[in-house]
Image (cartoon, rainbow, N blue to C red; front, side, top):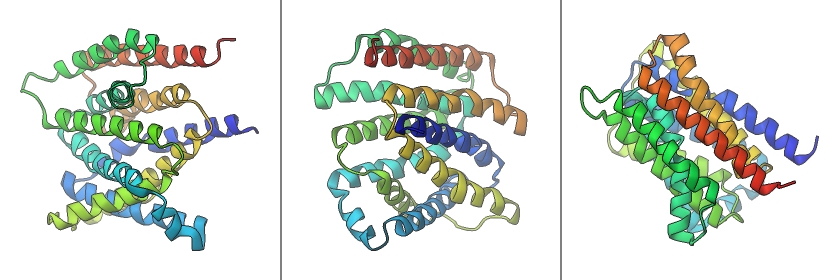
Length: 286
């Protein structure tokens, strides 16, 4: 198995592992802040233990090597860890994942503004359809006004884009430890804010599965896989979560998917699939 095949396998496994993320959050009766506290704390513990075993005596040097940009990435990971839970707690799962799916589009715009990198023509072609599809999906749930979860998901999507921009600009830095440090930051911020830690006995199993298995496992696999495959390939694989996670929630917990979400979601998935395919064609014209 060559590096590219290994990257596909690892990233694909990461998508499979992360699929139940939003559904597990829905199954937890604790508040969104308490769920985020457990998720961040357990993820930090699991990832920290993995990195400590992997790097052994070099672990402190690995953390120091993050530097200020690695810490900036960590802060954005922490923001994403907390905001994803709060977004799922405040709106439909389909809305959250469609808004998050715009992360690569926002990243292209930020890369243009910050790094002065040109936006590929195929990206400019796809952007209106991607943003328009999300607008259609979210508009279908605006009867009762704008949901807080939609706005939090937008913050998470913008944070993800900023993180992608930092990672691209500083690709020489190993950002895997930044995920663990970000989880520590998220946990510390919630703990200092006085977030209650107590959870019911029925919540313990999904909280542990969410924080100690799903989150660290998925992030580790996706980050490791992304090192060996191109950005368009990574984006295409991540569409698996966008498409399948709302369906899993509909089957497992009977969360309805509104008609506008089906229509807008189809537009977004087709647009981003076309974007990934055109990106691959641009990288491999033969």
